[in-house]
Image 1 (cartoon, rainbow, N blue to C red):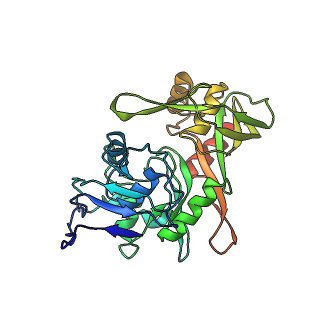
Image 2 (image 1 turned 90 degrees about the horizontal axis):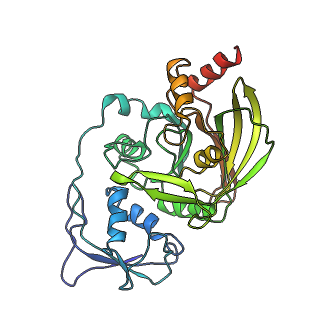
Image 3 (image 1 turned 60 degrees about the horizontal axis):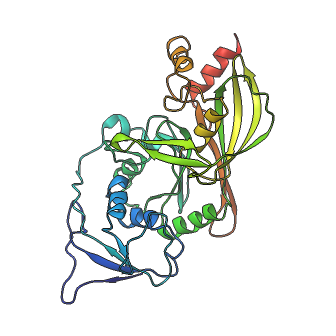
Length: 328
């Protein structure tokens, strides 16, 4: 990848953020095919996601001189104009209660990948009022790893398998597997109600509504929505609840949560799409105040063509909850 700089000038480094002026990048074959928003998040790792999308929305980022949308896919030879970004990145140590635990979450590591069993409540990255997420904690804890990148994302409230790449070329190849639908993710969800629908392929288009303060709320919308598919299979009944295995075929925002809520089987303790009264009962009487959604496993092929499969055990609080209601 070639970076075009002004003649007779060199780029100055900055301790907080190095992109102090406009610069241009010519896309090579390795970067071709990536969405521009994902490319920018890798190119500007210290910039919050919300800032990157604002740059795209306002036309501050240009490709071949023109404005583009976040979903634009880069082509070989594209000239990407990246503007100055004034973002204050504070070089402060993460809180001990976060930093001291990050190593405990690692369930697998090799020369290319890290796999974590992410706890509920921990964001995958900082931004929108969150100072530290998984990626920032790892960058602080492992300064030797200069190219850490998120292979995929989990909602802050969701626990389970989170894969992080140590190398950009590996990240690109796994993202290609995602794009081609060659990645399988399995989730466990406890929903309110007695599931009697058997195995289901939920095929309902989803549309993202942006509320005040940038909060995203997803709805089923046949006219504006994008294709979204989730395979559902029944595992076990627990009183008035049902444990389901959910396999997202597509990867839309809040996909599993919205699909199940639309079928009137909301996930227990989902405070955005769930049932208010059931959530209140779960918190006050049953002692659970986190969404019962866990990323149990993920599988894909690595750059050597080998099939990889990673799993994360269900958190202790969810296991105890199932045992408690199973006895009733």
